[in-house]
Structure formats: C-alpha cells, structure tokens
Length: 131
Image (cartoon, rainbow, N blue to C red; front, side):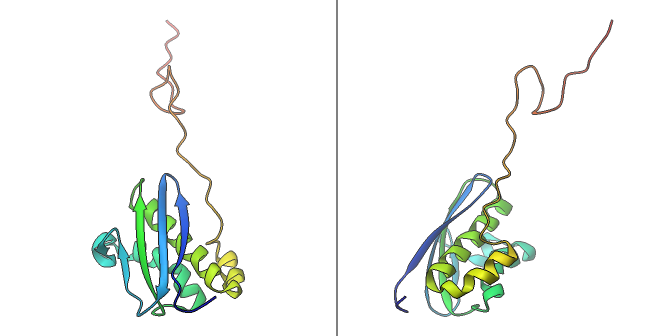
C-alpha cells in the first residue's frame, strides 16, 4: 500500500465504536479532537490503546486520529486498540500474525445482559417469602 495514503478502520467493544484513521507521521494520537493524554488520563488505558502499535513495533511511525462513541472509557480504549490493529493490518499484512497472537484482532463479544421484568436486575431475583 502507498505510504502517503490514509487508512481507516473500525473497532468495537461492548457498546463503544471507534473509527480510526492512520496516516504516516510522528506518532501523534488525537481522540475526539482532544489530546490522547487528556482523553485517557489513566496510564494503563493509554497502554491498552497503544498496545497494537507496540506489538508491531510501529510506535512513532503513524499519526492516529480517533472518533469514538458510546460506552465507558475502558470500552472506548479497547475499541480504539482494535481499530488501530485493523488499520495496521490494512497497511501491512505481515502485522496480522503478531496482532492475532496478542488477541487484538478478535472482537470481544461480551455485552451487558438485559434486565428482565419481574426482577430487579438481569439475574438477581426479588426476595422470596414462603409465608
């Protein structure tokens, strides 16, 4: 693939959806028009987001622009990681094995179970009284 072309991909986790745009650059990451550090202030979430780049050894080679919606910060971070991983595979197919082995290309299907009627939560029951 040509080096000056922008690559885009989508990552999802729980109810979060991240649209990721990757283009060659200096390693700048922007999430929802904010700096990466201000959007994900917790260090381990930043490591989660940059996991795809560190596994493939491409930190600092791409500028990453992310639009992410829905869910909480953890779901958004993991959706972003998946979007970056998919974009890296589009850029260079040789990254697929490393990202697959790390589990970054697999969509995590776990979702919140819906609340049922006649119960206070999804699985919790109201207190049973025999008398």
